[in-house]
Image (cartoon, rainbow, N blue to C red; front, top):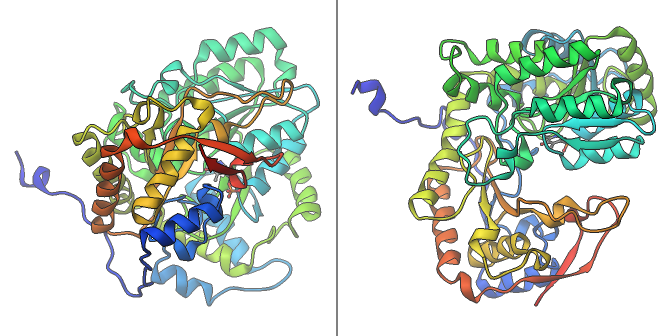
Length: 461
Ligand SMILES: *Cc1c(COP(=O)(O)O)cnc(C)c1O
């Protein structure tokens, strides 16, 4: 074995400023949980020790990004930071036109309004909460065309984010190409466990959609993480740089929505990126109504600067290897201890299979919600539910969706926590696992109409 092989990754940065963490007692956490209705989204951040709720907007910025904040050009129109961001987006993602938005869902709102007609269908590789909601609010129906392996937590398929070409073509034939607004393709599919799509599959989807004259809109929120998986898993890409792979992925799509709060190492921001001038023109017009002028889209100049600088850093191999390496470190420790998690280990998070963790809790008693509460209670670590609560209700029948996947997501903010925090996280989960039989399910006592997982409240059974 070469020396190189024996070396593991280490964080490619050192710490310049620290934020103290607060530790609480079990009694305090018990009270905090009751007050939060057993919903980790309703906990106060102050009461959380290690916050693994989400990787969205929770990133640590670099000294270069912080320095960029001081160079914010806070002009209402034509900020120089907009042009810097436009240049970075053209260089790394390859799209011609840029519309900044306050975050990802702002871009989803615009593109859904522009491309979806009432009664349309939008096939995609598994739904994402805000994406699907905007598609539905625009009058469309989302259709899941991801490969079956994505719904199987034990399948070790290397690209569980792939689209099932047969399912996609069957839908197009059934409803007619003119009824398909576009194919909604996500990179490292969040709801499937942070699972990547392969370049080969994306290329095939491109060929198929070309034949029917259908567009592809790329949810490239975590496309840089997806590029890393292509580099390490897909034949023919071992020698490509992350930037080259990223550019190739985007080249098979017509436009993209972006939540910069993930891959781009910032705390807020997003954008819509397009190649088609007519769609751009309409989006540039609509963004003024919903977000702000087309050269700031609800963001400060400094935020756009931080995004442009974050993009440069995010495509560096050392960064992405350590970022995904940290997730793998925790995932492998859990696997070594027989904790049921989604395999292969995803890019931004570990997903615990709550159905297998709590075989005695039926899905209607919210096993994943119960597990996230229990993890918090043990040590103050915050995670989130990705199961029946997140899936919501069928808009026609009003029933729960009962998704196959009933998961707890342990999500890692980028560049925030150390390996020792990772060890504490593993210990907590093992602790909960040891007394899993004593843990009971929950009852929902308050349910909001939209995206209920954010604000629903529960009681212990
Ligand atoms: C976060 C996210 C979004 C929505 O972006 P926001 O910035 O939270 O509005 C869309 N798609 C995916 C895959 C995401 O992870």
